[in-house]
Length: 98
Ligand SMILES: [Zn+2]
Image 1 (cartoon, protein in one colour):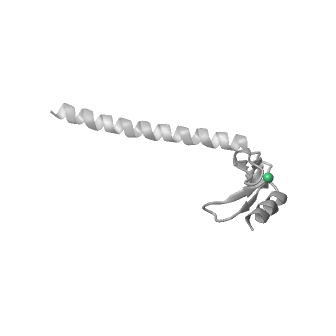
Image 2: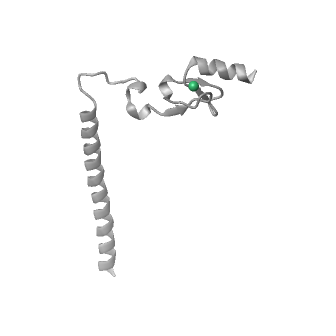
Image 3: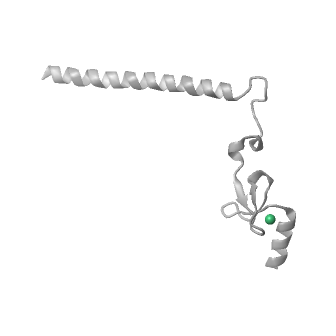
């Protein structure tokens, strides 16, 4: 009976210790990767447009061209935005709507 209890406590202790080790290793790994990806002499805060992951393609509502979100003209409510590739397309859509 006591052997089972002791084994259970030992198992719980080992699992928690293992989790702590894995967590510290993972933190070390991610911090190493992060420090490698960002140059130390560069600015700490890069503009979001410089990050390729933020270059989400948005479809122009007028001509259907896919353009990066940073260069699109965004119109409408924040929950349902409409994107245009250029000011021309925005004007064309506005002329069509009226
Ligand atoms: Zn367009």
